[in-house]
Length: 258
Image (cartoon, rainbow, N blue to C red; front, top):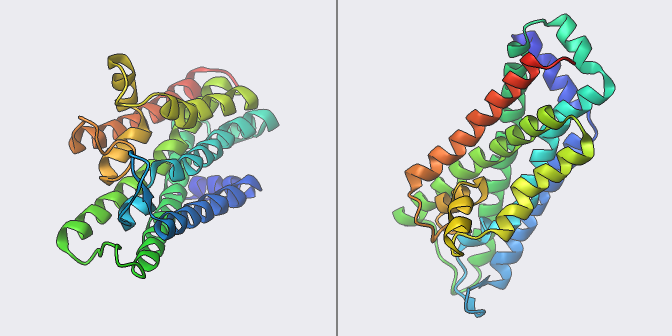
């Protein structure tokens, strides 16, 4: 299993899109966290409110592109192998297809979790540093703010691996780059922005089970902060997306010819 994980690590980093995509995701999260903190937070009324470093660092739209980017990297880890025929070589060398999926999941989840940790901690630190120069800035030294920031970081560290696993599942199902890219963007980007929890009943129900809004509920400042879904349910939603994605990838790869 160690050798198999090493092989999947080489495959992942041999893609030029991996370092570029992850670097852009982190850079974008840091830039938008600093920008939000520097210019204040836009309230629903349209006015500028007090600078909240947590809200600035974990602003929902700021994390949409990192979500899509990690989802595309996860999808490319499967679509690229099917397109190049490398998946046949892999399965000849390792006939146990479940082990291949397990190694891919471990490597991709670990890389995306590290990326999310860097983006979350770096973005929050930058937001705090920027906001501290403003008299309206909120300190994170009190226990309530420290707990909220820790929960936001934990939720973000789970979010990006979940997005990558969703991309893996979609790529395994569709095996076509264009169709996979569109589907990943729809699930992780377009859908959440079009469907909001404060809309009609069916739109609210659909939005509540999306990773974007589950993560927002856990950050206490994101797009799902006002949702009726509890924090425990939000954690379960993210875990369910991850589990379902792994099951789909395993079953499809195990049953479908390559």
